[in-house]
Length: 90
DNA sequence: GTTGAGCGTT
Image (cartoon, rainbow, N blue to C red; front, side, top):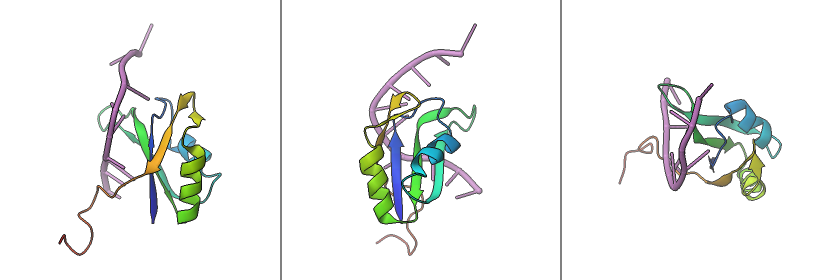
């Protein structure tokens, strides 16, 4: 499993816009843009998960530093924040 | 009608 954390996203960037762009580097298992739960606006960052670890690194290396919707985005390996990790912590 | 560092929700 390879999850990527996209930062510096434009306010107009949506899940579809993000996917449409990253989908060119590999098959996206999930591409979503974190938005405010109240208003629903984009918080400026999103997540992208690839079905292949290689594709993830490719996109991360390729997309990172590029421009999206007019804003230079940053792509980095996202950490597993949600979920305490199956099997209980040690 | 706004804002700008960061790791989300079923």
